[in-house]
Length: 395
Image 1 (cartoon, rainbow, N blue to C red):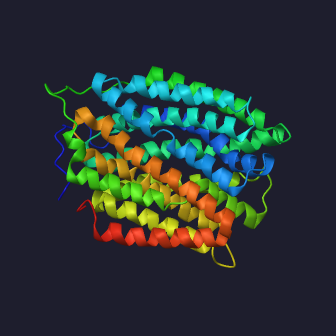
Image 2 (cartoon, rainbow, N blue to C red):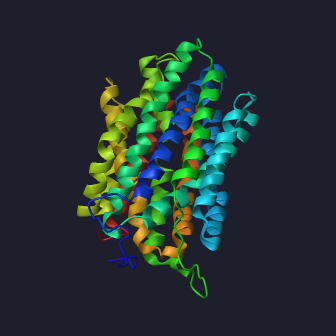
Image 3 (cartoon, rainbow, N blue to C red):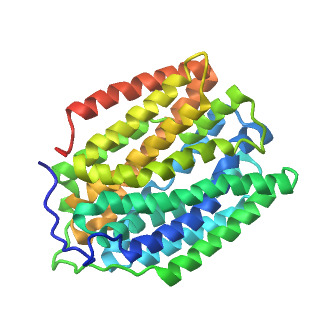
């Protein structure tokens, strides 16, 4: 068994409750996700239809959106652990993402948009690792799946509201993307305020001679490696929604409904699957989520695409992976390196998603959407077989 026994004592004396800090972080994520999902829900159509980008150009931007934060994640994680200021680093990240929403109002060229998205992702890169570290340090080791599930469920409430808000703003403003960006900025600022007021920092005593050697332990190294390989063969949400948009011929006002469908299923399943992962093992649940994603893309190759089933499978994928992966990694990381470890894990995924988006966009441009989906699906199936046989965790 590669997972080490956690040394941290339970934070809360009541084993039946999720820690208050987790709920506070969930509220911050809820509000921030309203902001980010308002933008995410309209960006694919805005880029491809309003700005006329090709799938390859969009793939590069989408990859940049995911992968540009690699170095920033690592530096932010190291700084948060070195000075034990996880909340401060997270707040800087939330603030950067809020500022990026203003940039969307004043730029229109692909290069300038890439710069704005880089700033936004830099903010996300700074905040995600310290946020997940705070969740794990505020929770009982045996209930990490539940804690992350509750946080991700609250986060997904925001993801559910965001597309609805985008639809409402587009309808009220007669299709103005700028109105969406202004509203998104207001929610982003509110998230920063809530973080400052409600969330408590968690500080761990530093050893006399801090060492990064625990990050190279076999268990954590294998978790990070397989998560990155799976990320490299996972097609991004934006491409899934564009494929469905072509199938359904949705207009700009109704396009955000696709993200809403994913968020709704994610919201329903995040807590149950987090609890299931605590009971039956986090790695099997994580892989099962990728099987659901493979099934969703497999349906896109059939003559009759059922959009409800595709979105349900897509939501199940996120519920089984997004919170389960950090819950699996946390026990192999010492408290004082929790943020750095989470940053390394997330950086591997971010770089892998950059590669995935560029390759999928190139295949779509050169060979067509159906071929791109078929090749990606085959690669995902092959990696899933490898990850099932050479599993990094025994549970």
